[in-house]
Image (cartoon, rainbow, N blue to C red; front, side, top):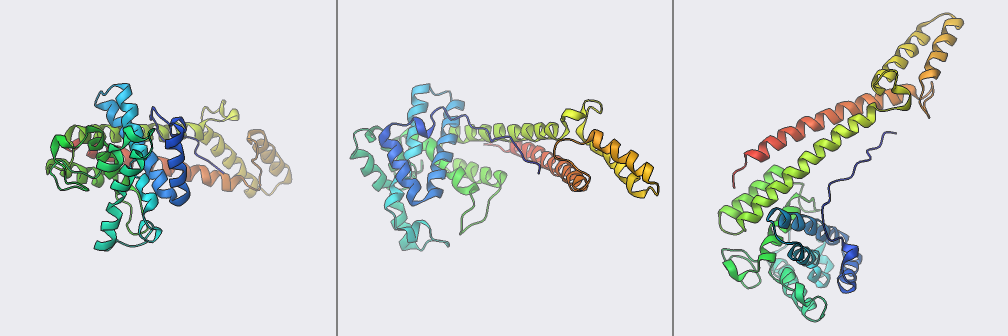
Length: 305
């Protein structure tokens, strides 16, 4: 079977395993109670770190801000599972309970001397610059800059992620929502501009991975004579078709030996057709993906903030 071997881009300067023991413990507990929220915290930390990079913030603050992002949802450990993992939209009453994860997370940090410096992340990441956020309805500069950055990263990761009660929202539509929130005074504009650059980076990287995968499909130990693995497979297919259409056993054996000379490890007469179809479909899929990503990249670059 053909397998992709390229990982998604990850430039987070501070990995979760590098956090201090108190922070790692909280994330471990969060993971045991709600794996989605734990993964969401990783995603928000990654985006936060990269936004900080584009904002040219120094390394110490970037590390601090990233730690705040890892911990921003730890208060959800004390939200009832029936609400946190509800497979449909929350009622107004349930939403009010969900909102308490901010103050719960803040208290958890304040009760641990090692986590106390990062309390602004859990407490203020849902505050909006125009005062419409929670839990305190803070406005403007009253909201710590780290919380303003985490809010942008949190919204992006939350919207693009598929949940039981909502379908996946595309990258472009998600960016449009965040840009609107920047225009209407909720979100930090520079952080939103930086997020757009992060998304452009990821899209370009994904295109690069797709091209690398095409090279991987073409590269093969026995493809040197053909300079292309697909050409090698097509040559085998010619032998295969001639072998099947031949009435002479001598000719059949001739074409069979020709195939065997070109076979790669694991390829046989019995499985060749399946492998050949897999390669053809993989080529089609990757080229379609590249076309789609290039179209998305063009649209993303057009977005105005």
